[in-house]
Length: 101
Image (cartoon, rainbow, N blue to C red; front, top):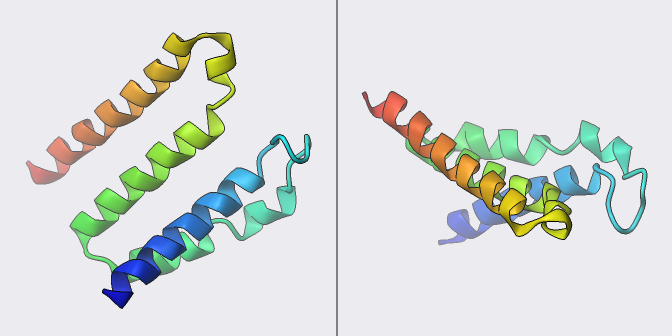
């Protein structure tokens, strides 16, 4: 139980660092120096996980990163935002099929 909570915290930390490094509402230039540290928690998490867990955690990270980074697409048109979400879901299932086969 503690292991899963720690894994979720590492994933969230990596996601927050990755999104904070990009231009955002708080600072238009982004906190670029965080880009050097954003993947360290994710690598620690991947070293401890099995192959199937890595695939799932990578999908969750990528999906949440697409949502977090593509939030501005919603201001142009909802369809653009939905296409990004659909593309990320389909890419997960395409990768899952190639790994199982």
